[in-house]
Length: 256
Image (cartoon, rainbow, N blue to C red; front, side, top):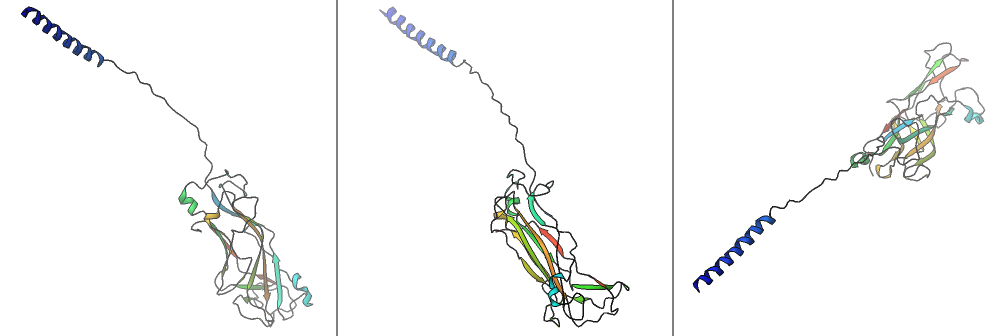
């Protein structure tokens, strides 16, 4: 009977050994793996910049507008002079290669919050300090006897010694190049003289700037040769040269 018990114990031990062996066999199975690659092609557009064109020109002033005063020549009374520029000034957004505003929203990009925050624009007109018109007689080029300062003083004809700048806006757009909106600010008329030497012609905040923002206008200038002057060379023709009006485009820091 003791032999039978011993056999059973051995059988049970054999079963335990077999199960342990099975466990080691399962732990030896390996799992296969694979990699999936990816690729893409993405085109980019040029960086957006603000540009200005048509701002440089020489505007000729004549007495034509004031001919109703009955004088075609200077007789010692206030003599009005005015003239409109032939150029249309345009300030617009686009790539550096652009010659004008585009209706394509993907013509350029501001690329990132930093550039967008600084994407507003401002155009100013400014006179130099102590602005004046100098005269030159046809027979004596150095004759400045009819020259006058734009100092804001009152003339004998009760006009102001200044240069009046009138801007006729032809269209100012921001979010869409085909829709005129009211987001642009700036003066349509300003009196430039000593003490008031600059004016903002057009301004657009960054928050209203798109890739198709633009503004255009023409420029008219008006002034008076003050009365009470006596030309050194009477009966001569005098040519006047006015101060240079500097146009400046500022394209950073215009927020709102």
